[in-house]
Length: 162
Image 1 (tube, one colour):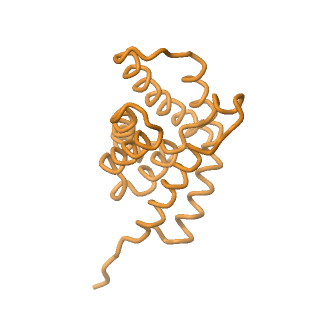
Image 2 (cartoon, one colour; image 1 turned 120 degrees about the horizontal axis):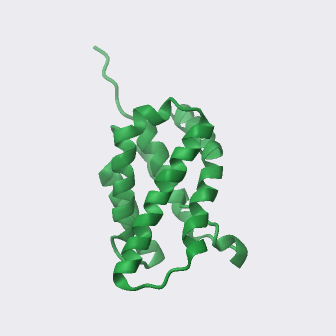
């Protein structure tokens, strides 16, 4: 009998690390407000592509990593990403059959969910919030989704991530 060996753990890890780099790369002031949630976008892709490998635990750890990287409230991103992964894992078979344009609209809703958790936790601790800094990144993430899918799908196929 032939046994299927899951491959690509390193590819998934490197894509999340690259997303961390994109999160901390310096941008001009006008572009900083529109920086998309790169880690969330990568997690959405991997949760849809290989749900048996990337799930709530990986999302939680990725969120903790981003919290530590940005020196934010520890657990804020972890909570948001774990909730995101839970929703994507529940709906991944439905989302995958849609064309990329419709997937982008679903991703917009998922990124708004992440933003809502961030706004809620910031409200709990009394951190001041500016409206445009929270609602613009999901829109930019939606616009980047089709290109990110094409890129990560090519990487997944090239390296045989299962």
